[in-house]
Length: 394
Image 1 (tube, rainbow, N blue to C red):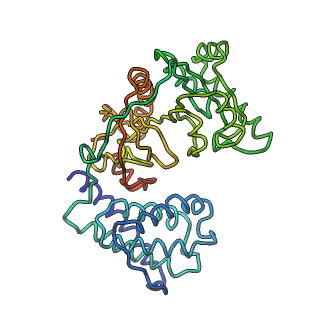
Image 2: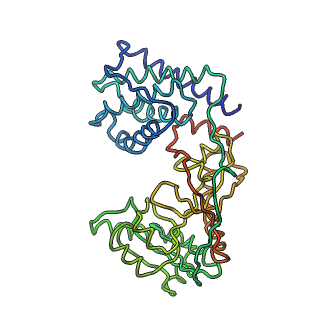
Image 3: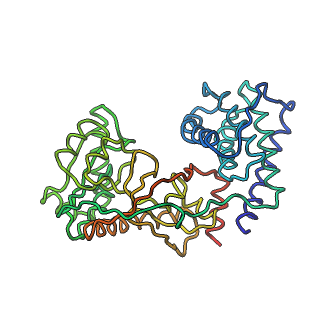
């Protein structure tokens, strides 16, 4: 009930803000197009959320109402706002919150020659009022414990297990390498490659990448013993290409790694994953399969669930891999903000990967889920993030 009370208070402030914007409009405008009625759940809504928050959001943040498809985006927001008038899904409402913050509030969208600006504001205002006036709380996803078919499988383990920390940053890569060097039966490497943000075909970009790594290394001078040991033992592999490139694939194939540990800012392609005999491990700061995607620590707090970390073998999707090694809930005390909470969870990822490798080298047991149809979470609005921060501080 605390969550819903805090949520209502935040929505009241937002509704007054939207109401004021509406009062400054010359007249009440209505979209000239027919809104397609869609239900509050199912594939159409999920597609709308994905399209708005993943595909269109970055371009809208850069271009605002000058985006060539702005009118179409506002039409999609209208459709989602119509869903929010009957939906109990907080994910739907928060998509509207977020897109209002980046599309409408931050871009002077009223300058766009499109009646949909006013139409969206009217629908958004009605959705906010509905949520403020309602007595019932919002939908909370049920945890999957005991409800998903799963089985124990045995993975074929080599001794020693050749493990590569796949990273685009030398400091965090060395920190992870230092952790797993302590695992008996593991032959550990650091595979340093260009991450998504640094990737470019130009030679200058490669020079910038190496300078960045040197700067990172100087900053993390406490890791110098790990670096020196890795160099002397030839356990650092530097690849001046993106992880998905053919050159990188060939180099990975030559190294014949058994397991990779995720450390790149990228989504791995199938051909990259297949170059690791068992796959690539990721320690996700959320309980899977319920909390896939982004901002899952915040969503766990709002839904009243404990946070946790799941160590699993990835596939080409977003946290959709079905082979788990560890799935542990964690209680992080003495945190006053979501950012501090996530920082502590990120620090636990290293130890979770180490524990996962110990499980592999001991008996090779893993848990295989038969399926996972839980929704994916996206970036969270400032409005809901402020509510999550208040809950953490209580």
